[in-house]
Image (cartoon, rainbow, N blue to C red; front, side, top):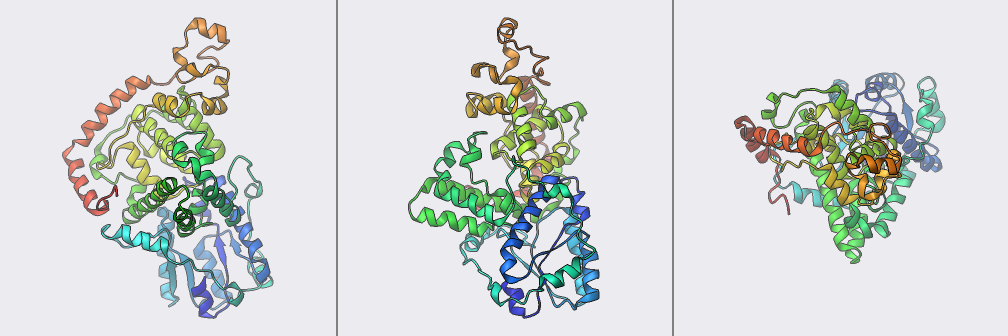
Length: 469
């Protein structure tokens, strides 16, 4: 913002809801509601300056063509985006349009992610330098903003926001910088105390984790703001271990986005090309049962139903969902990619695709983790609190039996007035047998010469020196 202010020209603040992006297979109402709420919050903050963010609902190239008719565009300012193929192609198109008119486009870094990298040399050092840099507080009172009246003239026939975006969903986090700061404040001052203890627990993590990921994904908070807020507390010797663990995850957050920035074809194919020849026997019934949370495996179903309703799961539970789809059900990670993208309120392409492939075991460089959903259930939801909340069919089942209801004997079913196959589904696969078959399948693939050759390239290009430091 300061760069635009220093240029001295009148400033139009703009956000564009692009129909092509809204209709993308990864997009969902929850995303655009969150963005709309965030823009409303931002416009409230801009009221003292008699301006607002102009909100367009057209393709970006159409907006620029319209603006060109009424204004002389001196420069364009934006953050550098690591998005999906649709946004990448749009950026190339806009870059060409601006260059043809000699209009400079200034893009500013986000996440410490740099475009054009060929290796990860010095990345860690540069990232720490980036997040520790002084935060810029733009001098809004010195800006020459277009007035609300001028903006209304621009938007006279443009704004067409669906009413569904304006209806809040009480089960999901609300968008906006203001509420993002509230989440951050409550975390660094209080909730962090149970961060490491509860990070993998499906129910307790909802309070103990930072919950700032959607505010990072949609630009309400910056990685620098979050890191520095945690660093202040860490230097005060408050919850040092928990903050150290939290900061390591902030760094890994950016690490994966940088990885995707360097090799964005991960959106549509494995980073390790050796896995391109792997054939999958697609089972639409398995995929649909997984998507709906109707697999007959209690923790899997609880996680998916919770995600659909709230847009949030902790990392381990997300990884387990992908593991179950790709390993136990033997399906291609791409068959779950868009569905999960639509469900995650914090959908971040740079994290989404690398993590999907890592959990699916198609990178060739990461330890393949085949999560046992029964073990995860007993370890992280021992009393079945989370399961019973999201799978009400099991709410009256004793905790000792809720993790594997298919093992309840016919006599016990009568005593509980519960009948498997009627009150709750039979499991669509035997988790132990399916897990064993998956291990054989994935480890055989890992030894393929083409996979091993690609692994060497990936390590050289993407792996950080001393990556576990």
